[in-house]
Amino acid sequence: MRSLAYTRSGAGAPLVLLHALGSSRHSWEPVIPALAERYDVIAVDLPGFGESGPLPEQTEALPANLAAAVAALLDGLGIASPHVAGNSLGGWIALEFAHIRPVASLTLLSPAGLWRGVTPLYQRISLRATRWAARHAAGLLSGMVNHRLGRMLVLGQTHGRPTRMTPEQARQAIHAMGSCPGFAAAYNATARRCYRSDSRSIDAPVTVAFGSRDVLLPPRLSRHLDQLPAHIRQETLPGCGHIPMYDDPAAVAAVISRAGLGDPDAARVPLRRPR
Image (cartoon, rainbow, N blue to C red; front, side, top):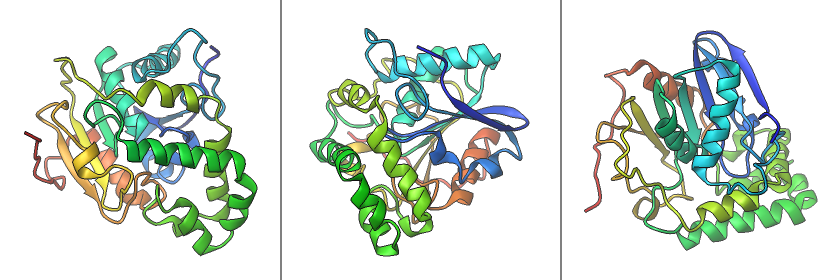
């Protein structure tokens, strides 16, 4: 596998950004300018997504293996103990990364994997339908997003405020979902699994944030936090959906920055663990 594609900007402590299934490093572009004022920001295309080649054919695209690929990239860059922020599948990968490399902090934005056993049917159907539409009806969707109503219809399931995206940004998201060669491998590797800590500890600060308009991860199905460290901080991103970076860039950047600083005054939501 060739080296992963990435974008690097800013100066300071290293911060690694990991995107969602079917997305790319470009999904982080709205928040990078603010984060680059404080961090050395490395936004990564995961294996099989964006401009990165897939994992070797014999390597299953498990979150742990995707995390290992990111770790190899950082080893090559000479980066140790970074802050890590991940969205959706990227959040699951961030957790696995923290089990194989020291991290300064973790920020999990609508992380995947926090369900019981297999991925809930609703989410599997939603992901496969989105992928099918992006591959087979890309022209139609790309035309629809020229209009505000079209962006609401096309992106309303993943974004809380889809009209805040420009038509070009919306087309970029459609293209990323429809063209990524690693979608099937990552989908198949995660559809029948969930994140398990297996008693592996994470000592770094961990922040979990869900958008108040995240309809892809229903609370009762996909937000079981009992596998996460007991010391996590939970936050809510008002008005944001499953992919919140375009919905409210300032709020997302603030959550990541607070996690990196270990801000004790960060807004908190009482943690309720399922019985």
